[in-house]
Length: 226
Length: 222
Image (cartoon, rainbow over all chains, first blue to last red; front, side, top):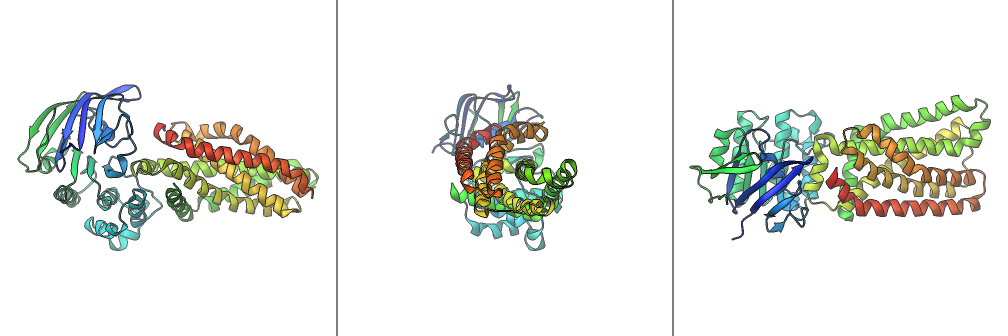
């Protein structure tokens, strides 16, 4: 089976600076992989390259069978990215934001109600403007959009950030469900204890390269660095 | 493309209806501009009557700058515009949707400003067909050019102050043609407006085409 993510000697530039300097990564379908490393190591850039948001300056990059060096846009509809920003509109309600995200990606609108309920955003919160929400509630709204989109590849950048313990448990549950339903997950986190329990392998990112790989006790399909 | 355009236009108009920036900020600003022109030029309405078309379209151009800036800001806040890219939406559709939403707001503002010049300057709105055709064609050009340039400026740290500097020279031909067409209409000489209407149509087609084709690149680079 073709890997979901295949990066070979990938160089990616941010403002002329090599944020990735020859990164190699292979992730197979159904895996959950954790990227760890210090700030500025290149974790977020790996995720953004995989999402087709950052161009590949050198090397080979294939995600879900799409060659990102030729077409970065074709893969996006099949990917869900939870970044530092929520990608939300303050003047739209929670439900409207999630509905727009799903429809924009050509997704199935019937999944919206379930996603809102899963993230505890049904009832009054669903009709509340996102601009009135707390940081944690905004994070859950962004996550609800991911759940509703039912993407094949989840790219999560600090998914636990800004959440209380209940919110973090909720994220863990949602990620486990995504893996169980066949989605592939690549996440970057400083909350190593929590994230390690979700991942089958921990990859260390340093200086724009993936420098080490270590399996965890979590049982999902094996990930490999090449 | 048209499905994505409808989705984005609907979203932007819903945001506008909630935030009421057009009705509570841009519309009062537009009327204030008309009042200030009246103070500055001629209290007895002599100069105002002759310059009404130019003052009207100048006020519309100022409103355009504010409207497209607001439209771009919505996408910058919480990096919402990145969500449009990640959703894999057709960039031409996104452009059309945002331009249509801006155009809808401009049409409302133009109607308000028309009432304003009639009331404040004593302008008789003759040849309504010419005035409406001019407004529709000019609005298409203003909204299309404004949406494209706002996307360029949105990604820059100095975007809000740079946008008028980038945009106003591009809008100058539309301002000129719309003013001349309206002058012909207000003077009751619709035949004189035809060539200006053709020019406005050409600008509208050009700006829309450039926007549809180039907006994707602007999105990726901003």
